[in-house]
Length: 173
Image: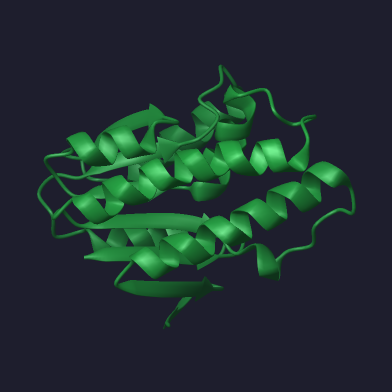
């Protein structure tokens, strides 16, 4: 089972993703993103830990592909938007030429997709649906929107199901 769960900010998509794996005795929850020494990031991770079963482990990392490839339990990846910002930050590419950024992200996405399609374990991935949000009209915002949109499409193509969550309601696409 490979499921992509998408929706807007605060739509309930993370809770829905967690519910898809609720019957698994153990789950590796991947906090995919910035992994900064940041109070907001720490609070987000703490809130997620507080509502999940104690048997779930947490990996705070940008190496989502590595976690999926090494996993011995179902994996929940939350979220591809924060993962993308981390991928760009890792390479210090926010000011690089668009083609250079796209090439770097494509390489990391190819590795993630190889891990996703190479495992027999259930994997649920959470992402923001960029088509539903207001994106500021400046270069980095457009770059982020376009890259995440392309990532969402490629990940959706590799998944068995895609679920759209709006206001806590789930539509299976």
